[in-house]
Amino acid sequence: MALILFLGPYFERAFKKLGYEQRVIAGQIIEAVKVYYETDCNLEVTRKVAPRFFYKQLRKPYYEAGIESNIRVVIRRDDEECIALLAGNHDQVRQFLKSF
Image (tube, rainbow, N blue to C red; front, top):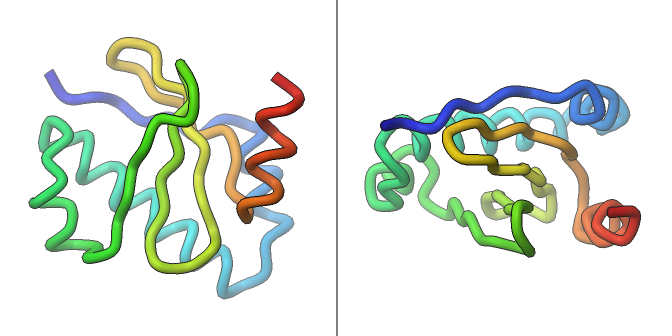
């Protein structure tokens, strides 16, 4: 069964604070994550869409997704439901994780 991605309200606020180029990159990451989930987490297929895509577990239930730039998306994954929580750089991701 494919995973379902939702965009949380905190993600939307963080997304709006990004600059134009950063929003474009964050949008590309979200699209790559959707492809990743729709293909039952097939990294090969996803990398055809976004060649430098990565997806790694930070600590349960948090995951980090990104592409070639320093913008990352933090995702909370619970069974088949995944919620995008934050779009930001590495320091913002670390700060976010400290608060949880």
